Length: 166
Length: 220
Image 1 (cartoon, chains in turn purple, green):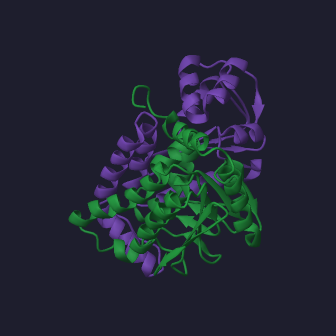
Image 2 (cartoon, rainbow over the protein chains, first blue to last red):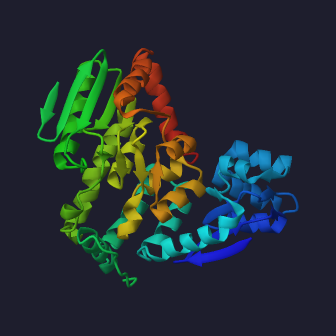
Image 3 (cartoon, rainbow over the protein chains, first blue to last red):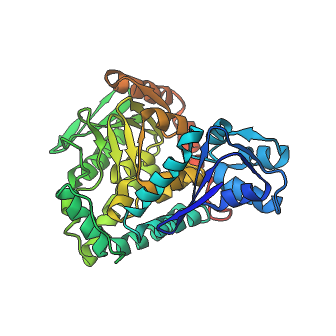
């Protein structure tokens, strides 16, 4: 399992056996991608209850229970169907796909990324009204940044934007 | 039946149709927001059982806010901009009848938000969905995507701003069916008629129940 990071966003590129502590760590990442040959299991997790909580948020109750109570080993296609990973690629393409994702995130305005991640994390704990209020607070802050203005100008001039994190 | 400069609407067999007609990309204008509101009010009076919302042409369902207009927002006007958008979405969410989004092309940014507030979405093979806010350093559709999706998928779309095409959108559950472009309106109408034929109160209660199902205990 390869751990990547870009713009404060964590990514894991999963190859081979992803079980126990590796599986737990993978669940903590913001984005998970996998090779076709990867296999997954919650068996051997340090804290199965924490794993259960995380999986319930990631996948919903039915799927989480199947994984933490069944403790079966499942393949990459199943992981994609369940939503544990969001992309599965041929094993030989995994490294390049991971690198491309890092580049893609690095090219985005850096202030928006952690704000989006945190808003997604908190959305489930809030009523729709409070969640929208959180989103709007971020929106008001982000729209006033020079990075946002730079992105819009670049869009109209059909060129890549340069961001400063301000 | 009614229309304004950028919106058209009509009723057929207890199904209401609203078309966002602001070519080429159907950018969401105040006329559209007003049109959606007026159409839904008229449909309510006409005993419409379900609504189909779509975009004109085959390029876009709705491309969201006009970046040219949005560029001029100031600290004072951004609040009004956000509440105008929210008002429209809330009207769709709180409408007592189901709203079916017929996604005929691009649904991005605020257009994706509009699509996601619909109760069911069907798409043509040309449907393309993108949470593109992040590309211009903004955040939009967080709330809807976090609710419709398990968290992992919501993050993938929101953090990368990548385009999700019709097939993947169907697999993810963002679209309930995908058909050829020329069949899209018929497909959406079939979903709408199926809902319009059921007891009105039952359908309204089911929609309300889903709306509040994910709210924290005690807040319902």
